Image (cartoon, rainbow, N blue to C red; front, side, top):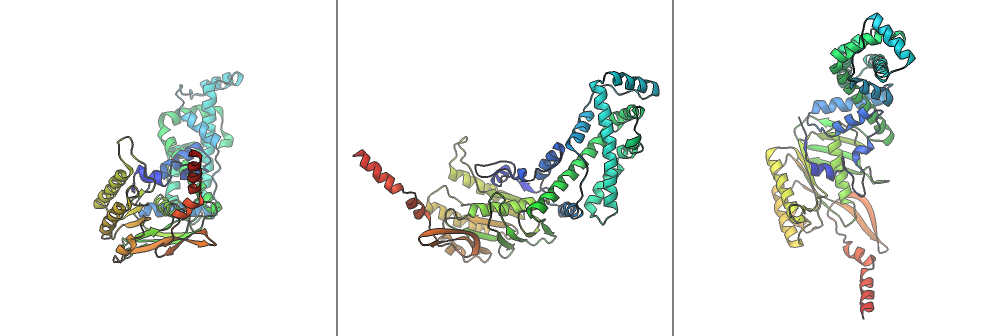
Length: 442
């Protein structure tokens, strides 16, 4: 079951794209040994799922590899040469002993590119299958989870693996290579492609296990209940150095979080951290937190860095309105959606922002099977929303000390009362610059 997320939301969370202050999240996971593993990583990160069994199997596999410290002895060069051999379109080597001998001695005198590609490719394939059999045996002899057991069974079931491992690498001779070339490229090419995908998947899992261990991340846990429930302990955004961690709790009784806070308090970063955790949980990857337990959502839609649509002549405010309409449509089509609105209706005047936000938020409070995080500068909305029992009021704490703002980046219950807007303007000395400009004009 596919987890629905659109390109705007992927951009908001910087999954594959960068911004001026953040690199793509995928870059943090790019520690695979092979180029094929990197391609598989991209494919996995672009395929979120709502299938709880799939997600549990993937996280159990990563945890198992981490616990066992498994490492598949493969190299980028080895897999590259196998890939190159797989794409080789020259004639098959002749597999009778006489022609095999002629090919061998002719290339002994002057090694041809085609013969080198084939012989090297075959040698690496056999070496790979031997390595895999050892790897598989280690897994079979341990208390491995079902996910990785099924994975290695697929490897053993491939005719390519059964056929090539009948000849040990140490006993491989030139006439074996001629015979195997015809079999592999004529009959078992599909097998080899399947095998490589399985190897690349293992490559990704090993990289994820290593990253989880070295960066102190955790794997999400999933609850099968259809009742909305999300608990994240110590969540943070990986792009923030020495980030302050926060906890969140969501259930059907408080499924809407109304977030306030002053300028630069860290609201957007917090919302990105929460959204990123939910997204990573739905690809079965480690998350940037200490602990997470969640029900499975059917999709996510965010509005964090919504650009003006200059191509279509749309103002920022109208782009926001259209985005809210897209969200409403999504909610009407499905349940269990995770929604993030950062600074709802920031593109219009305060009066319209207040009225439009109150109208939309009030209607959204009737939806109890989805989760909503909504941030705003219009704190006056809070008084109107206190009558809705499923709205939880949170703010990022900021306070003044000796007339200087202190940013704690800590999430606390309640509604922000701090106003830093005028402080920031005054602190930049803009008024003094304008007055100096006036003097210069006289």
